[in-house]
Amino acid sequence: GDIRRGLLKSISMDAPVSAVMNPNPFTLRADATVRNDEVQLYMRQHGIRQIPIVDANEKLCGIYLDDSLGTRNNTVVLMVGGLGSRLGDLTKDCPKPLLAVGDKPILETIIENFSAQGFRNIVLALNYKGEMIADYFGDGSRNKVNIKYLWEDKPLGTAGALSLLAAPQTAPMIIMNGDVLTQMRFGPMVDYHDASGKMATMCIREFKFQVPFGVVRHTGNTVMDIVEKPEESFMVSAGINVLDPSALQYIPKNTKFDMPDLFKAMIADQKDVGAYAIREYWIDIGRREEYQKAQTDFVASIAKAANAA
Image (cartoon, rainbow, N blue to C red; front, side):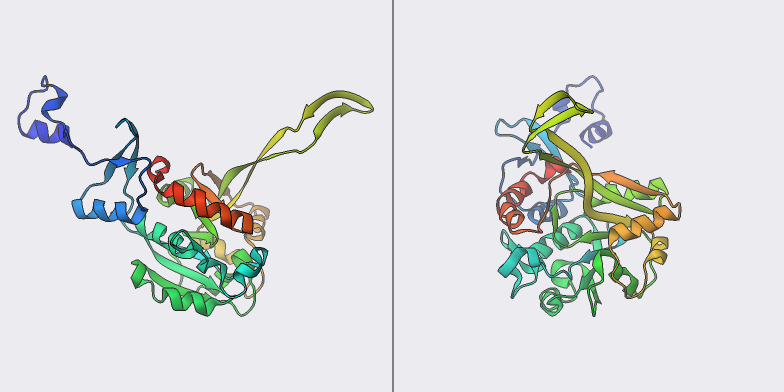
């Protein structure tokens, strides 16, 4: 932009960069305690699409990209009907999506993240204490989205509630577990899915764990090697998926059906399904340990969202 404006002002191509550059750009510190929505608001107000991210020495270390200036027509379905039983008494009187991480409920952070990236059509699949969730979010206008609800009369799993969708879908849908907090950008994921031509795309992430014992490598009765407490690595489902409308035909009506069941059904029918690896911050708040962990590291990750953008 600076170069283009310089050319329009007839500045010579031999001129130094300082002749066209903005010497005092707005920047965001990588360690700043600023929320995503605050940055997005500033960018909208000033009509800018990128903000340089600098470290304590004012050195460039990233760029914050604004995905919110263009809206997406994709529906986002958030599965928020679970009991949250692994969280114990934390969910006795409050559904897990309304538990606070930082200064707001988990689900509100998720919805605001989608809204900031241009995804405004939200569907919430409800069961356990669903009335509390619906009362809190209403039609979504407070969070600048349009919210509709799917009401389960019995637990339908992580995919079964999709059989309750009334309106026909014309674009790929994002299906996400309602207890996942992440700083990933959803637009590139949908674009990847569109370009692939596949019926479904599963987000995957690396999971590492350390074996707490020495692992013995052997052939028959002969020990060949001993590896002390090795670290193993696997790619696992991240609880985020993109589905073409045609994938809905594999979901039985009013029956408990999980997302792995759906992917297995498509694979068995020889349909192409893809994988999309994510490297950005991600945490599944399924247990009390993850809930406590999210109180510190997810809140801290918000200030560095641009590094994942």
